[in-house]
Image 1 (cartoon, helix red, strand yellow):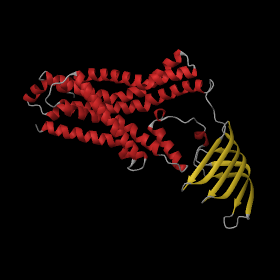
Image 2 (spheres, one colour):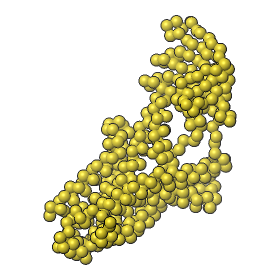
Image 3 (cartoon, one colour):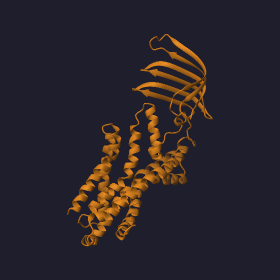
Length: 363
């Protein structure tokens, strides 16, 4: 059951937290969304009402980014106000430890982190997809481009292992299929089929075709086989390839996981998707890290104001973004594991927060 002290600190945090969300959302939306949206509206002649819709649909992604920043600002302002009014001194004189004062703040940061994970998985992808659908109707001559064919290349050891072409997909039926299979860069089999389909159990089934098997040891020897039905163990779902490519904002972590598996099956490097997969969680839990860092700074004996709290918040956020950029660069270049690269800024900032908090406790 929440005690009186916990409720009191929660009440001190909630108003500056909401104000912080509003302030950072306005700043980020104005600097990243609004200007680009105006340019797109002019370029593609998008009506005003749809411009408003696009702005509203793109707002959730900005709001999600503002959650950790608002936690940091709220913590600094709350403890700054309590320190200026000598409330922290009174709490300490009454026998309350620094750890006891920090517990509700860390709990608040954890709750916001969990909320951010849900928000990023439920609200942001749907809003981003809706925005992209509206935008594509104007960018592609009033209707989205629909791919009618599939061209797929699987790689093994940086060499083509299988090249697939499907000229048309109609009502779930693959038509005019050509498959060329290679071994160490040499053509080993060529399959042509009139029709085919994807099996839910995994694999492609071809109908009414012809198969040419080329013998590597004797290039002049070719085995030709006519078939009415042939199964090929291709794990890639062709209908996944006909869908438009979505941005990371439109994808949940589960969607990213499937995209990573698809790229791995094709022999492509999925490092960008792997980084996005881990970053969605690490950025969400920046709220928890910021709560520790904000508490360790806010509890230090000094006088502060809301303006100072905002200034310190912006400085810490800048450092966090710098560390995030470094981590992403190291992760994308395969210098460090993607998981560690994504959590690199949280590890550094969290360690700094715990170090400063330890010093405050030992004062």
